[in-house]
Image (cartoon, rainbow, N blue to C red):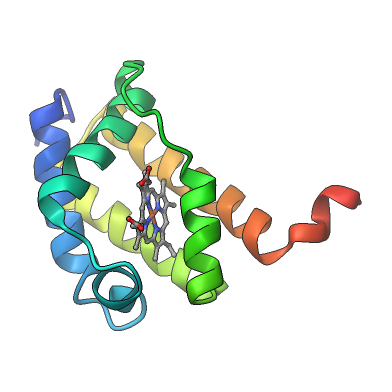
Length: 128
Ligand code: HEM
């Protein structure tokens, strides 16, 4: 299996990820009902995000925390939602790619999910 080497690889990965995520019984409704995704515009945006992370290309200019803060207000995230997101993301990568970038993508996905979860589910923690 080859590593994630290009934006085209990221698009393949993300198409497969959203195919699974959108029909997932735990988190699918976020993508289909809470904030229905238009994959034609969403995949390029998320590919920008991952290109920024994996290939040090400054493509993504959004604010990922604000977007999920807004989603959290529409329909509260729970710990199991993040766990499922991470599992699906890691399974999708493992099904398609292997190598240094594939490992980095899995690690970064998990660590961003952890930070998101702490910020959204434990907003008072910065006061500790
Ligand atoms: C419980 C887990 C998660 C769920 C259910 C979820 C769901 C969603 C949904 C529905 C959107 C579209 C929002 C909209 O267009 O209004 C979105 C956007 C996005 N998500 Fe997530 N997400 C989760 C975790 C993550 C994680 C861990 C990452 C990063 C590693 C991530 C990265 C992104 C990015 C980059 C966007 C686009 C933000 C923008 O519009 O600039 N998500 N997410």
